[in-house]
Image (cartoon, rainbow, N blue to C red; front, side):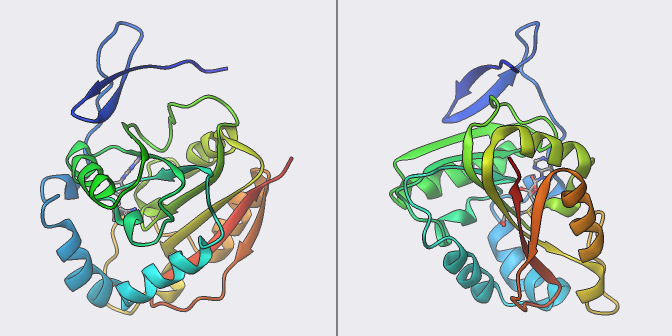
Length: 223
Ligand SMILES: C[S@@+](CC[C@H](N)C(=O)[O-])C[C@H]1O[C@@H](n2cnc3c(N)ncnc32)[C@H](O)[C@@H]1O
């Protein structure tokens, strides 16, 4: 079983390495503009790059999560804390992200929205700082395309989820992408995602929601 040591600074947990130094990661490009992040997503990324509707996106996420209460939830790539727009407040929320600036903003939003249990960690998706089988449910929105090593992430995801637990994800895919737009990161097709998750021990289910370039799916950890 992996073990981790943390130090908490201004409500954010940092992982210590074996020498007691803070583990640091290169923050995502958007970290510098964390105060502008939400407006860029709403006014530029959603309409121009995804050809999608941000309100519809939150509505889909709210509907998918409406029956989740009092669960240990992991969000991979918390960003600025958009989960306040769709997640029930009575859950125990844990979020990770490599961008401390966005996590600081997320902490204020969760706090102001009345979430009681919030733990935020500066950590990459490929090295989750949690013990095995810790979470009942996990989600990751609009971020999978930025991860350096998707297979390593899925291996870590499987390790920290309980048997039968579900992962819910939204991600832009190339076959739905409007012509002429550039979406950064590595775009996997729906079939590629299905194959990677199935080969890693998950039951994969494509969701039928239509919202521009975005593909919504769940992957449940088999026993
Ligand atoms: C487009 S934002 C999405 C944020 C949030 N999930 C949302 O829906 O608004 C992408 C996020 O992925 C994070 N990110 C990029 N690479 C990562 C990695 N390897 N591990 C964890 N987070 C990462 C960035 O810091 C950023 O917060």
